[in-house]
Every structure is written in C-alpha cells, then in structure tokens.
Length: 386
Image (spheres, rainbow, N blue to C red):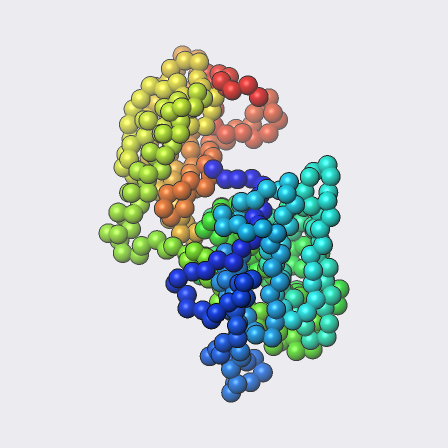
C-alpha cells in the first residue's frame, strides 16, 4: 500500500552499472572531460562532474556546485522518513549561484515550514531538486507529476512529454520569473524551467526540478540544465518490462500469481477481509463461482452472497508496471438487484502492490452526499472500531 505522507533523509548512493569519476564524501564527483559540446562552442567540450545523489545519477558542469540538503543518511526511497523530524522536502540544489532552503518549525503540525530563498546574479542558474508533492508551507503547485498521474491522469496542460531513463516525465518553461504551475516566483529570474519526474520507488511521490535562470547567457544555461535532466539515471536503474512476447507473458503470469498470493495471505488474518481473494482464478480472463461473506473492498456481509469472480485484465503501464482489474458480479436476489464490483490494483513491474481501490460502477451515496464505490448487498459493520 502507499505511504501517504513522507519525505526522506538524503544519501549519496553508488551504483555498479555506471562508470563514474572518483567522488568526495558528499557524493560530488571530480572533474572529468566529456564529449558533450559546450552550447557556446562546438570545438571545446564542456568539462563535467558526476554526482550520485537523491536516488539519481547525473552529470553537471564542473564549475557548478551541488548542495546536499540531507539531514541524515537514508536509503529507503522517496516515501521514507518521519515528517515529525523536520526533514525538508528539498533534496538539494545544483548551479553556479544563489539559492538556499530555509526551514522553521511549524507547530502544531510538528513539521518544518520550508521556503526557498533565491538569490540569483547576472548570468547564473540555480536548480532545485525536491520531492513532489512537497510537504510543508511551500507554495503548492496546481498540477503534480507522479506515477499516479502518469498512469491515471490528469494530464498537465501545456507541458511537454519526455522520457527520462525509461519513465514518463513532463517539462514546462516560463518566460517570466514565475515557476510553472505554481504561485511561486523567483526574484530576478529571466526564465524558469520545470520538470516533473516519476520514480519506480513510489507511485504517489516523484521529483520536481525547478531551474531559475538570470541573463545574460540564458540560452547556454538553459541548454546545460536540459542536458543535465535528460541524462539523469535512476538509482537503482529503471527496470523495463520484457519486449519479447514469450518473456512478457511469463513475467506477467509470475507477477499475477505473486500479487494474488500476497493479497490472499494478507486477508487471511484480517477479520474484515478474511479469504476475500480466494475465489479469483490465476488465469487472465477466467472466472470462478463462489459464495462469499467477505469482499476485497467493503465491510463484511451479513448474509452469504453467490458471486462470479473474474480476472478481467492485467495490462502494462507507462511506469513499467501493471494495472490488474478483477470483478465480482451477482444476480438479483429476493431483496437486492444484480450488480458488479471491480477491484483495481496498481503494481510495480515485479508485482509490488502500490495501491488498490475500486474501479466502479459508482453511485451517489445519500449517507455521505457524494459519489462512492460499488455497493454489495447486505454490507455490515467493520470488526475494527473506528
């Protein structure tokens, strides 16, 4: 399941799949020649340094600096960390000038309220790497870009679609000092660039990268920032689904069986879900009949209900994961009508369940005054108070 509110403490992480120059204790690399030409000269290659930080690996101009905002070392992922410990949402800053993250205690929420203090100078750039969605008192963006948005939407209007290390990303550019899709402005900025990056580590969190540039040399600095982001690799490396049809089917079947076993094992000891997943077959498109008193998505039923359990579909997603859809249907009884209830699992490529929910049909629930999920007949109370 998805952790709802978390920010990680940051760490430098080494990866064996990428040849890199020697790095100091902060994970910032020494200078190394690069075949990438400088935007201002086609003859002289730009000198680059290498960094492996924030579960990312990237090259940057060697005359820029990398500022790590980590408070303590952690290697758990985007959703690890304790909000009560005051970990800031900003991973770090990259550039040749001016930005700092200032955090103040924010009681009674027991988290830190953090804002970025931009201090650009002529011909400089500052790039901010942060978790999305950002936690705290910072300006909240109008649109987010995470794995959930990539798979389920909504799409971000006006943003350019990119692929970064095999995962979907989005890019937008503001020709003013305004950060795209945000109420935040950067004093002195000639233009502001924004990228949204997803991550296979997490479905509901991702990366937001903001690059603020003050002229002159705007075109050169923009090209360098775009090259940095375009060359990002995730740590660990993005795991791609097989393209060979036979291997694809084998992986999908293995992931399907793993996911169903995981759900069956978890529900076996849950009084509200006891054996709710037992009726589902392990073949895509197959159905089986059963009489149930527990469902995957509601409180227990007060009377047994004959149902048909169907494994509707399992399709790959742009996140190199899977969407698994299952259904339970029933014919009309003496005091209830016929119906169908869908359950949808969003999973990583290896079958780790990111989140689950109902996929309809939906109805207006008068008790709560809003649209709710499917209704099974004879729903009872939860066995867990509160």
